[in-house]
Length: 275
Image 1: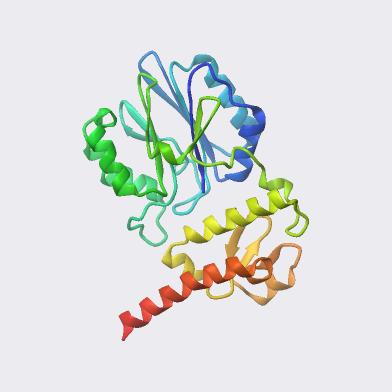
Image 2 (image 1 turned 135 degrees about the horizontal axis):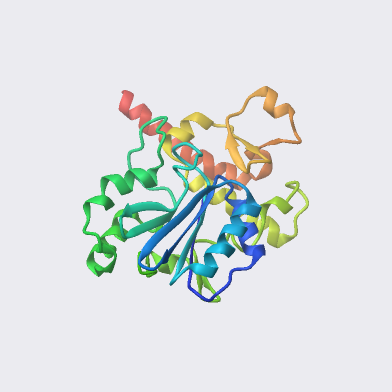
């Protein structure tokens, strides 16, 4: 899922929100800020305490807005290189939330974000973020399930699909994973109605973002990994570890039927192609 944040100068984001962002999107974090006409990036942060410390340090020197990002890896390695922010050009960096509908080679070491930047954004003029038509075209290209946030060397922030995010106390968040913490849900059967709705919504979005190769890999009876909050293919050994795995079907009939409908469509398409 990831979360992308644009934090204006002078507005503090709480430790609680930063902890939520990191815990809910824990494949590496990073920040970017501008000072004296130069951009600074700190990324590849895999420790929550260090993440909060880096944000606090940057707040004291940043001139203008700051970008903050916590990643859930959906393609590419889960390493420093694929952590956001990413460099677009000497005067511009960006962060991304979503899964881009572009070709990502199997076993690619780099993410869809990196591929998109290298293929498209690096070909644009340095200050394309100030062009309304170009930003509108980017929004059309990435669709309404992706958000980009850019920061230039003057500390100015620009957002693609800003209206799809959430603004709270002047800070822009690409989704609501800053406002709660999945780690407090230590099992799947003891929730308040609000918590249950949040868990359901999380897995519904996860299913919605599954790519064809992921559907093929998961098959028609996926398991939920309770620790990682992710899907894994079924096997008997995993199924017997009830403390760690639960079949999607047992967790929610509705979500399973939502999943299987998407899976069956893929199988139908493959059947037509092989006919």
